[in-house]
Structure formats: C-alpha cells, structure tokens
Image (cartoon, rainbow, N blue to C red; front, side, top):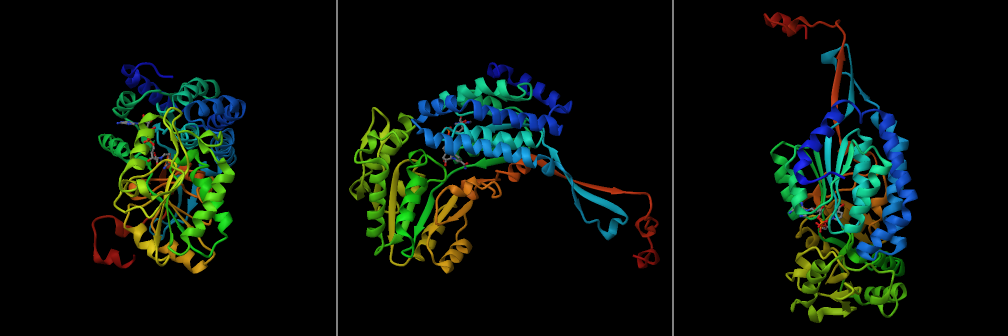
Length: 461
Ligand code: NAD
C-alpha cells in the first residue's frame, strides 16, 4: 500500500520511472502478474468471501460466482490470449506508399489509475487491472472505502501476489482519491456513479488523460406476453435480488409490461421470490444487506415517498438495524416519482404497465441511455425492433445481467451510463494505444512528390 497522500507524487514518479525502464513491457512479466492474480483468487477464496460478507452480507455463492470465478476466468482468458493480443496486426499497404508494410502495434499507455466501486468490490478492482497489466502498464488501484473489508484485504494481498513495485494499492476515500486525481495519469478507469464520473473527467482534462467511465443508470426490462413466464420470472429475480439484492449496475431497475399481462407476471414473480427467500426474506442468508446506512436511508426515502408508498404490491419489509430490505414490487408508480427518476440500486422494483408492448420503446427512449436493456419475448420481430430502437450499453434478450460474463462482448455504457468498455480483448484495448506503424524501404520514389512541382510531373500519378 502507498503511504500518506503527500507521498503520492513521489510514488507515481517512481512508478513512471519503472514503467519507462521497461519493467512492465515483457510478455513474461505480464503473464506472471496475471497468474499471480489467478493464484490470489484461488488461494484466497475464503478470505475474499469473508470480506464480501463483512461488507455486504453477500451470500457465499454470489461471492464465488459473481466475483471470484469471474476474476479467475478473466485471468485465464487474458493469459491464454496475451501473445495474440500483443502481436502487431498486419494491415494492407496502400498504393500511395508502395512499397511498404503496415501494422497496428498495441502500445502500453504508461501509468494508469483504476478507481473501483463498493458493490462488487473484488471483481470491479481486479477485472480492470487485468486489462491494464495485460496491456503492459503500471497500475494504481483505489478500491472503494465503502467496502472497507475488501479494500484492506486487497491492499494486503496484492503485494503478495503481484509485482508491488509496479502495481500499487491506495486505500482511502474522497481526500485520497482527490489527491490521486491531482497526479498525471495515462488513463483513468473509473467505476461508480455519474456525479463522481464528472469529477474524474474534469480532473482528467488538465493532462488530456483519456478516461473509461463505467457508470450506472436505470436498466429497463420489457416483458412481452409471449414468454416462458416461469423462466422469465426466475431470471428477472436472479438479476435483481440475486445480484447483491439489487445493488448491481446491471440489475433490472424497472419492468414494463402490458396491463393485461401484469397480473400474471406479478404472480410468477411472487411465487419465485417466496421460493428463493421464504416467507421472511429479511432473515434469508441468501439476500445481501444494504451496504451502509446512507444507502439504506436513500432507499427508505424512495419507499416513503408519498407518490409511491401506496403502490407497493409485494414486500416492503425492512430492518434498519440489520440494514436489510426485502424484495419489494410496486405497480404503476407515477413516472415523475423519484423511484422512476433515479437509479434505484436496491431491492425495489417498479412495474409500469402500457396498453401495447411497443409503447415501452418510447418510454425507455425518453429516459437516459441505460447500461443494459432487457427484453423477454419469443417474438423475433419484437427482438429485432428492440435491438434497433433502443440505445443502451448492452442488450440482453430473455435473461438479465449474464451478458457481462461473455468475454467476447464489450462491457460499458453509453451517454449517462458511461464511456469506453472492457472485458476480454476490450480490456486489453482499453489500456493500449493502437500505434500505426508504416515501414518503407528506399525504393519507390515518386518524382511528383518533390518540388519543383509541375503539371507534367502530376500526370504520372
Ligand atoms: P463508491 O461510493 O464506491 O464510489 C466509487 C469510487 O469513487 C470510490 O472509489 C470512491 O472513493 C470514489 N469517490 C467517491 N466520491 C468521490 C469524489 N467526490 N471525488 C473523487 N472520488 C470519489 O460507488 P458508487 O458511486 O456508489 O457506485 C454505485 C454506482 O456505480 C451506481 O450508479 C452503479 O450503477 C455504478 N456502477 C457501475 C458499474 C459498471 O461496471 N458500469 C459497476 C458497479 C457500479
């Protein structure tokens, strides 16, 4: 871990010197760090699960499946593909430069800063640095202070498993992050909310530092009547309450369905929720708690809003002492209520009804662009129309959230949900510069190129 904020400048300068000396460039160094991260995720599984439980009461299965195993598969994928990603890509030469060869070379950016968020504090810290390391950069990771157990575990573990001279952890909150943002970076990769995303981007301006902003938003779920209802209900519930009790950037934020289908969908969701979490969900160990009292009070505010408090049709229980809120469903809340204006980021799920399913498109397009947009239907025309009509970071048909497990798909937002993307090769590219390299020999002289210019010389071109 780095020392006090005052030494940050010196620490970043030291990282820059090590980067400049070429320490992070060799494929062997990169692969060794990635293998180190893989070993860390494997050997420290119990410790990581313990920290995630301390921070969020995250169930062991969710910690393993959504954080540890995704980190492991990212590491393996990067190790397996590293040489291929690093290999310069030959491209056709142009007639203008004949004879020549041309290629695109992936160049590391330098010293990069990764700022991560609290809701998947292990995954969101390690997954971006996998890309940064694979691309040959020196890295500073700033985990979220809102998940303190995972933050301090990362600070303790990383130096044991990777080259601590080039991969550093800085713990802390706003003061430390602000001090970090004052330094010069070659890329800043930020995960969190859009308000801080704007602070990050503003601070990047002074050195023209490129940024990736992995933000959030309200992820819509459109449910058509032409579905396998039981499967749809399970997958919606798994993506909402089975992902950190709704505290996930890709969690379904609200459902849109038709008036006539809503009662059936509701019944199916209620059955699934009772099966998943029993009659007293506040006592279920399979449901994460709300991360802290600030977020609990924020969600309480949404629930107690007079515009929506009489629209609850399922759930609504909460226990402030344990920071627990049960899965809660609302029907037809006003579109101008806070719950439909803000990202919910918790276990509350409004269902909005429309006469015809296509009306959902206009509703979604009237809102800011989401990180993920979901549709449940067997109707392939509706699937096509959704794909072409809705702009979103990513789109998933007949499931929720699982698109982010596909290493071949970019994961990132658009508009208010962010900029840039990562995962798989996209992570490598997010932390690389695509350098254009053209190599000529000394043959192939075109006289027309050189003064004195003349129309006669031009004719030969
Ligand atoms: P957070 O509170 O952990 O903040 C994120 C980071 O920003 C932390 O490291 C924190 O120290 C830093 N930070 C906070 N205030 C700051 C300030 N004033 N100046 C500088 N740095 C500051 O996380 P959060 O923002 O509550 O995260 C939730 C949001 O993140 C939601 O909107 C969610 O949708 C989004 N999110 C997006 C993704 C994604 O991959 N796109 C993943 C997870 C969460």
